[in-house]
Length: 142
Image (cartoon, rainbow, N blue to C red; front, side):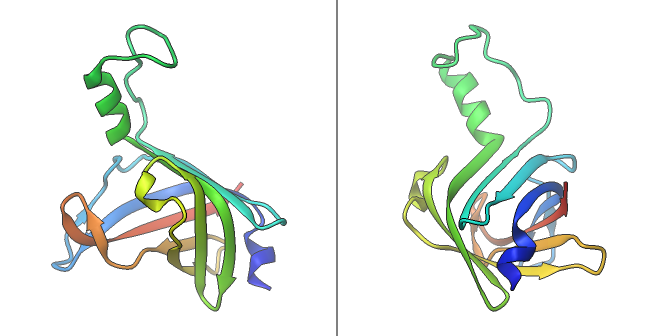
């Protein structure tokens, strides 16, 4: 069963966008940091961010300048909720998400396990950075 193969912690190896012309971009740089956690109970959590993000000047978790908050938002994504596997598709239902539009909306990712034990996920075409693109992520088990 594929759900059992997912259970555990996965570390991000690569993350890029691909547009219809074949152009590749790295939204958080080539060395983006991320973890994907899958529980046996059907819960998941994922976080991806750019490395070396700038700290808020105040050091206050709940404060920051508008510019600091905007920069932090542009370099981070996370969501958590329940998941299930249907054929070669990972379906996630976020219950909490940095991007509020995803809360309660199923997110489908084409899923493939590599011969080396890695996990490849890709999105359907969606609006990313103002263009219709697909996102491609490669994970390795921790």
